[in-house]
Length: 291
Ligand code: C2E
Ligand code: MG
Ligand code: MG
Ligand code: MG
Image: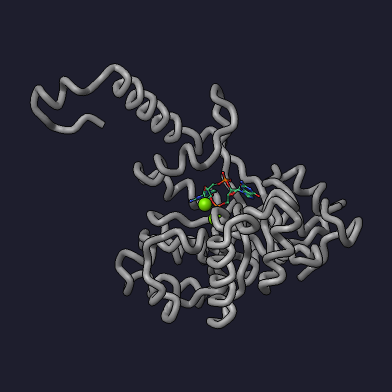
């Protein structure tokens, strides 16, 4: 976006920058129409226990762009945030996630809980609580089966408002997770007052947990912190069985990561629910059961 400025400012606006901002503008305009054209999809990634029982699934949005193909959230969620389009997109995501769980149920496939990411802008929005309440009523999903993942960022703004929103959400009966825990700039102080159920250890700590003493120390400390505060804890980005073993040895029994499954489109997740053979050593051929 070109800022108001003098000639000098204009002079350093290079052709490359022009191309970039044009691309951004095009993308924003495409994004504006994506909902109406039904171009978003949710993929689902299981969260499992060490014994491979299914504890839930995280809904992760993708954008099936007519020309660019499948776009990952990292490449459009920031723009959606900035433009405010995240609000209608977020409502779509919540409803779609709850709807999917209900259709799986209708087929006899139970997912104990579905997690939906809520971005900072959505969290600030005055209508969030009412939106969630309404979607639960309309889809018929019981609140306990909906988990909202928020990041620490929401704790750095208006704390009073944040606490109020979290309490109102908890009053609906949904559960709350802190996503990417340990990567934000917030103080630990909020953990005392915020009605949180789960800490999700960020995957950047999990990635090198076997080879970096510092990451191992951070991971162990987060797990202990969660335990001592009475929260459950989930490790993200688990790719190797040894990572899961390390986490287990530190008393984290809940995992999410490519080791168990990549995020799957709904049809493939249906197959996963029907026939899950989680590719780990033990136990073999385990069908997910209700946690
Ligand atoms: P997140 O909520 O922390 O989601 C976890 C990300 O890690 C996902 O990336 C997932 O595909 C990826 N992941 C899972 N297991 C592994 C693993 O073992 N190794 C590695 N390297 N990566 C793994 P994804 O789907 O690209 O999503 C990126 C971020 O975009 C999410 O991070 C979340 O912050 C945001 N996002 C996704 N869907 C939504 C949505 O519906 N609404 C909002 N507001 N944000 C979303
Ligand atoms: Mg998440
Ligand atoms: Mg995360
Ligand atoms: Mg993340």
